[in-house]
Length: 483
Image (tube, rainbow, N blue to C red; front, side, top):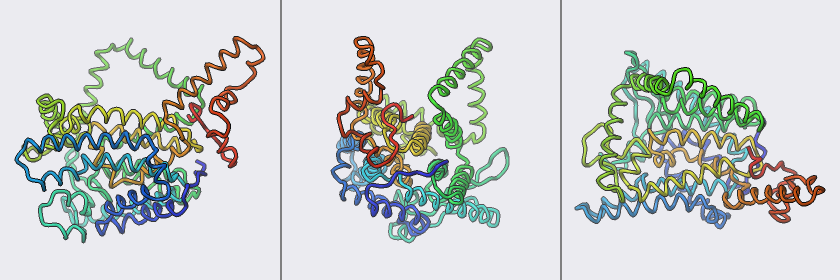
């Protein structure tokens, strides 16, 4: 794997982000990881490239989700007996603020070009820290035989006992023990509130560290990320990683090879349907799901009950939802509106929030897949990180992942650095160029010799995106050729 060659737009900003990521262990131990990360993101947003941040379409797509979720909170609060303090607490919670922070992180990463070599090295440092802490946690688990190990940070002591959010934001979680096939094992949490988030962070660390120019740091980062992923024990994260590896390898193939692999896959599927039938495939998939659920039966049953209750509650208020999760109306282990982005948003925000969430996810995925950034290698990792995040939508709450794992969203945003126009406009330009080429071939045989790239450059005008990168001596992968 060759190193990333893209440089950040502002060296000072990239250095600040790299120092923040490298300082994760210290910030986590003091309880400042989330506050400092959010403060740094806000400072960059109003800094040198603030105008470019505001011109990022993804920013407004995600801010629309957060704004409409806030509207749902306000409308539900107006019809309740809760006081103003309750309202402020709900408006400042992850189900609202998380969407604003997600859009801001992507926009800041894009504006400052944070998919740079400095950021890659700092992520490799984070991988090393994950590896060391994983070893320490395993040793502590077998020496102490504790069911869990969580230590309140100095910032956490400033809050009164029982305040919601202290356990997730200002507590050092090391591990928690669970029963698996009758054997007592541990699940690592490391620098994050719970194990599944550790698994996602491990995926991001692996695929970002692959671009480090040093073999030693690349190896340490990848091993540390794998340790976090395996130690998390998250079925969803491990499955997302396997799919991500397949996609990452598939994206390295040329277009013809990718088409051949996809065609072969479809052929195998058609053959399987012919041999065992549709019902046979359903029985097989059902058996696999039952086998996976049996690994942690209690957790699976609790989630299933929560999802059913969330759906039934959504049907009672389908437009604006219920404003916030159901912790105050149910004593279930998994409260309604939690542990799922899909069911959670339907329960808390109704269609008012779910519809813009769908479009924001689709718009972001389209931007990542069709990015015109100058570095294809970084682009492939961004696709895999985004895919892994999307794979967790059903079982985890995406809005709560953003603040603790800001580095991954900065990276994904940074890979969009080469994109200067909205994705639909750029796609329309590519389609128009192809149409012009076909028309020229029909009308003027001599025009058939003109390449598609020349037509695309002519349609986008002089001094476009590709010309800017070529002037800097950088390779340019624009439009659909980015894959």
